[in-house]
Length: 173
Image 1: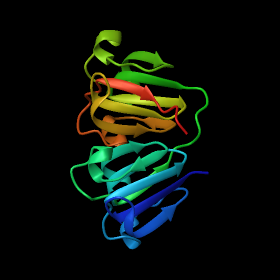
Image 2 (image 1 turned 120 degrees about the horizontal axis):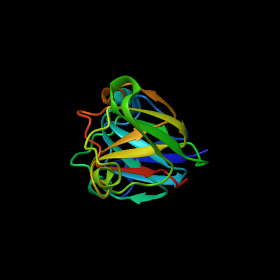
Image 3 (image 1 turned 90 degrees about the horizontal axis):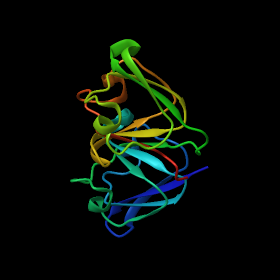
Image 4 (image 1 turned 45 degrees about the vertical axis):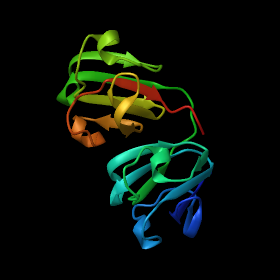
């Protein structure tokens, strides 16, 4: 089990809400979020309700203000608990609906272009583990949580386009 605490004010003050699994709409419990403590587990937090908008990965630790999780505002509206790590495997495809060249990945990839000689990933199938896709190489830019399952097109993981610059396994829990 994980445990995350959302605070309305900076430095862990003001009204707060504790969550141990997932919550599709945190705004039912708090008005804003300016600081967070992750006491156990790891979580993906989302800017908007129902797991949409910008995503931020948080592992155990203290985040005294929204800048510490790289956000530009105090909007956190939903969260997912990340399952404990096990083995990892994702199949990446250069076309929608699992078409084109297929590439298997079982470890981190700091630069998709250098490793696979492609710029875009249009679909994927995650058989094991939780992954983070980043828009740019070296784990920079917008990130997307990729959980076990089939993603027939990049929009199913929340991507604005098929650009994936780097991929990292979620190993922390």
